[in-house]
Image (tube, rainbow, N blue to C red; front, side):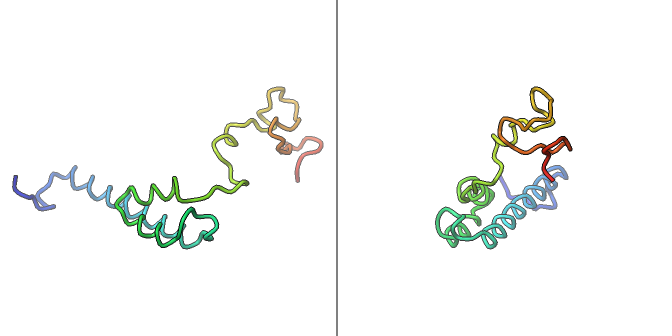
Length: 112
């Protein structure tokens, strides 16, 4: 099969290639920006290693985001997003939710 020039491809394939390239460059830029701003203590392994891995197509930045960063104890994870808040407390009575978060609905004892 002979190679086709980009201009000879159908418009749908041209759009798909441009979108895939934009996604890849966006992930790369986000990973490099995060690596440069994040302290070494918050990254698993040396920064230069993750910079190099980030240049491996799309899988490099994704690998960094999933496996290269250390999680802070104060970061909200999937469990925190699913925990009920005061407004969603099972009793609906304004008491803090099971996770101990402060009331935010203006009830007595509500946080600032």
